[in-house]
Image (cartoon, rainbow over all chains, first blue to last red; front, side, top):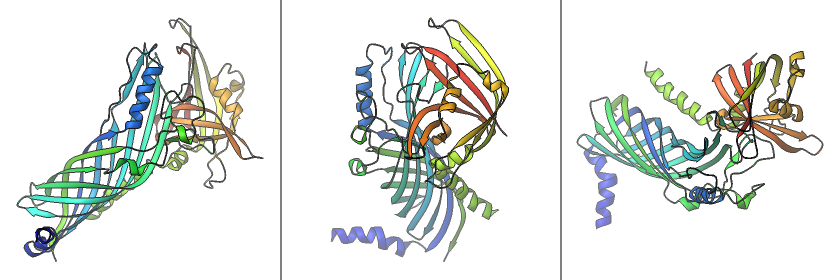
Length: 253
Length: 162
């Protein structure tokens, strides 16, 4: 009986109570992300152990990221779908060696195709949604010399841009608040639900023909980084999007 | 007006998708570049003093792009007489040893490699830091350091799209 009530409240009641209207919106705003990456934390620990004699400030991983989101949505009665692109960059994790600096940060590009259910309560709309997400996570590493210039080249170990790419599923809950007929504010929380199932790809340097190098999962790995030594794309990630949506058109069918 | 608001987000999203496509970066950099100036700063081992050498008008760097993944991107140079006077240049040494090039995502560095066309094997010679100054101006930046990690030389090549 309880399950029937849940099914009714989620799927049937919006059809009965709400007018079958449709609405097309564009939306955009800021993004905050949290990248829980255990393997990179392992790298950080081993890097600090390996360089303990020369480091004047230990490397510390900062998982918090900031960015933006842009997208468009379509709602037909209780059914909601959207496409969006978002970007976030983690704060730079730094180590200091006297006047020099070793830095790492992650850049994340996401493309989401989302379907969800729109539940309306007065000025609020709650949209639990599932997304197919194309996620590209780049690890960028630089060495900053004492003259203030950053090197992304092979003059120092780790420096460069390492890319990873995956197609995965994310879940989320979007809440909108009507400000006027056209304008709404929204909060959208989404996450990669099960981190370990996405493993497989490694962080490789992009663009070269066959001599591709990978980022090591431990600082104690020296020389060529083979498949077993490479850091893999196993991470858990949370996103909080805050923004404004604008209704381009809305009408009853 | 509605059409504008409809297509603007699509255009922005599509361009955002291309941000993580390395091929897009390579296409953007491909073409002929005038090597306008080079400046090499040499630092003493104590880190205090530096000497600078500058050379201008070194010729052109032609970066070819192949859409076929079976072929690497080759390059050639049109060198001036000034180019031959450039001594102790890291970037010149890398260019002289390589025959293919590539660019990383975000155009943070430019890779140069040596491809053996009989075996197909590619060896990376070096990746050089790339800095974008404007759409048509980039800088290639080379660093060398002493054994203790202190900066030994800092070299900048100013490139202008031809």
